[in-house]
Image 1 (cartoon, rainbow, N blue to C red):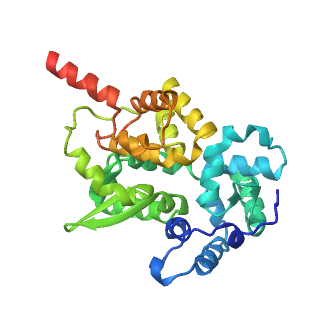
Image 2 (cartoon, rainbow, N blue to C red):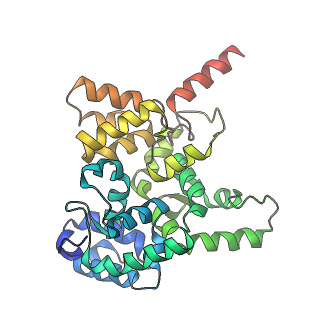
Image 3 (cartoon, rainbow, N blue to C red):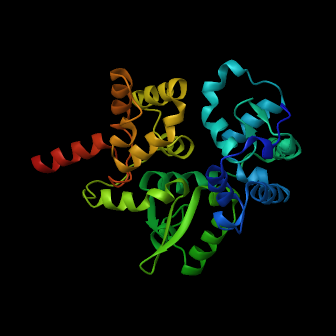
Length: 308
């Protein structure tokens, strides 16, 4: 459970640390004005707030942490938990090399797991809005606020604004989203897409919004947790193949999904088998450039329109 290597000893890539520090602390400094030790200290301070770790983690992450605490995790099964391991590592909670909880997080994890056992996870409320942003890439803030995530379509503007304030007060929601301004309009995007938002906009201009998004619970949860609809057999095969053989390209594959641009990942592939598996999987993944539907569905919709 405790490998002995602390957070500061583990993280040494400033840009990577900053990307996650930026999503966790409430008032992040500019990257040029803060060092890695300073960022780590600010992150540790954030975790010192009561139940912060609990509200930062999804139900899957809390279940995984409980498994670690209870010593029921079999390291031979680590591929089944790559999603949780990657995300918890990005949150400065879990050492993905040694498969251990960082020493300074043990107390926080135990308290979060205890609360989880008693109350369940609080993350379910945020699954749908974060999944939608991961599928679409971005929305105007007004459009996002107008979406009825609580099931009520009859809300006053004040109720809408209050509901959104509740959303952004949650560490899990803040970790996954980013609000920015462009040409006098406020937008909200999936946080990991901050650096490719302009590319998503450019690619989207090449296509038309041909079909509304049609989601079921399985697809929503897949997109929230994995960024890919792994209930689809071809996507699942792609996801498992990447995790087992080339895990370092996973972020690039998701960028390729978002942009509907296979060339993003093509340079990493050296054999026809890998190329086919990834091409086949991406064909069934919702793309931000295609307004949240997959290339397969987009092509079918075009054909249906021509024939109607």
